[in-house]
Image (cartoon, rainbow, N blue to C red; front, side, top):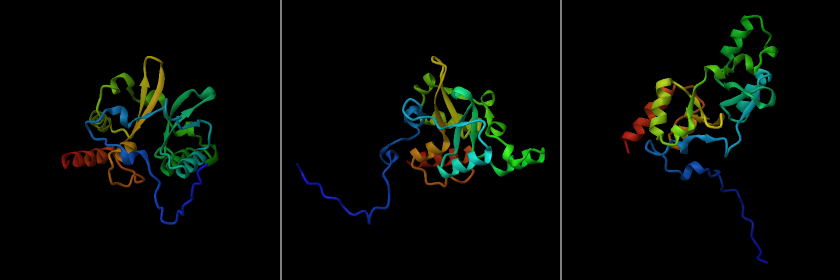
Length: 191
C-alpha cells in the first residue's frame, strides 16, 4: 500500500469552481446557463415560513431566490430577497399586520404572475437569446418549464449568467437586468 503525504493549507486561498473552466459566451447553448433540477435540487421554502426567517436564511446561504411550495411540495410561487426587503415588510406593517405574522406566501410572486421558458425551445436557443429575452421582460429570474411532463425543469438567473460569463460585478447590489445586459454586451463586443 502506498503512503500518501498530507500537505499544509496555509498558502491556499480559494476554492475552485466549475465556472472557472467553462468557456461560455453569448453564442453558447442556453442550456449551459440554466440550473437544471434534474441535476441540482431545487431550493424550496414553505409558504408558511415567516418572511424575516426566510430572509435571514437566504442571506446566510447566499441564495437570492427560492421556489415557494405548499403541502406536498406543490409549487405556489417564487420569493427573492427583493420581495423580502424591508420596504415590502413595512408595507405589510402599515396594513396592520404584525412582523411575525408576515409569511413568505404573503410577499411571494404567485405562479400565476410568473413566466417560464419552454425547455424544448431552450434546447435550441443561445445564451444571447436568453439574455435578450430576460432584458425585454426585465426579469432577474425565469423558470424553465418542461411542458411535456408539466414539471418545472429549472431556473435561469441573471446572477448565474453574469458569473458564468466571468463578469466582474458585485452581484449583491440590487441591479436592473438592463445593467447586466449592458455589461454582457460590452464584454461581447470587446472580444
